[in-house]
Amino acid sequence: MYRKLRIKIALFSIAVLLALFLGTIAIVYATSYRETMRAEQEMLSRYTEAYWKNGNPEESVLLPPVAPPPGDEPPAAAPQVSGQFYSVELDVEGQASSLHNPDSQKIADSELIAMAQRIADGNTENGVDGAWVFHMESQNGHSLIVLLDNTLISDSSSTLFINTIRYGGLMIVILCIIVWFTSGLLVRPLERNEQEQRRFLSDAGHELKTPVSVIATNAELLRREIGNNRWLDNIIVENSLSSELIQNLLTLTRMQEGKTSQERVDLSSTAESVSLPFEGVAFEKGHVLNSEIQPNVTVDGNAQQLSSLISILLDNAVQYSTEGADIHFSLSEENHRAVLRVRNESPEMTPEQCRQLFERFYRSDSSRPGDGHYGLGLSIAQKIVQAHHGQISASWKDGSMTFTILLSLSKS
Image (cartoon, rainbow, N blue to C red):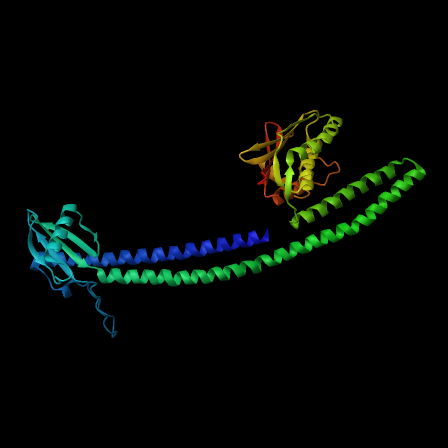
């Protein structure tokens, strides 16, 4: 149980760290990309404005203005152009009437004209085409497509992204190792505390068995000597209940230790042998036990524990069923699983109360009156089901309480 808790803590912590890491990267890169695009589009617009006035401008006039330094501070460095500017002017027929290609080895004139015509056909004012950032404006029927070689920025961004993922991934691995050991430190005191509790319950239970046995023996001897006596009868009853409580606590302790032997169990035969005596018990309480048991249902588990599971559920139904109401017990195969159901009429219970039924010593005042039972039976039933890697649930509907157990069928 605590190993699963440790894994959950570690996975949750790692998921949070990973989400923060990826979120930070996404925000940083999105912001950087937006700012870079804004600056480049501004330079492209300045280039276009200068072009319409004077033809192809010098790149030095395209840089964003630098604010003068206050006082005697040294002047700020001029912003750097991220790449070279290329431009194509298309006439009214879409043919190139002017071309500026500062690096024909990077892109041929024909390719530059074809790209400009493709951008003009797309009728998009600003955008990105591969490693090129472009801006398009029209004037007097002519279209000017200005492109900025963005290869350097793209390569730098790619390198930065790869390094971020590489070294960030390494840090995540290191953090995962730290989280795993930290989760162990967090869980270890809880595990140690439960071990001490189990040891205390086991030691105390075994120590209490002796005086309870002595009281039972002496009470029987006293009854033989003085005959029936209501005070003596009360001592015997309470001592019997104490013995049952001690036995249940020891059973819970053994179940928590997870020591469950596995074997192939004929659950149908077990259900029939356990339910048969309860027909008489139910009849004495004014109930009729109706059993529907499908034959040859087998599971892998502990036969004794599964018998105790069925006994606990039937005893619970007999004790808490509405007076005179029938009790229904069934075993069947559904969706490749063994399904046990025990249904009895019961006062209304909320879903929250149904979940709390499996807690130790839980008792609902409105529907589960004190009658000598200590509220450990269903908790033991839950531990048995968990030891068999199954599921147990309680639900109330239309005046009836239904306990449902799902177990995996035998693999052999």
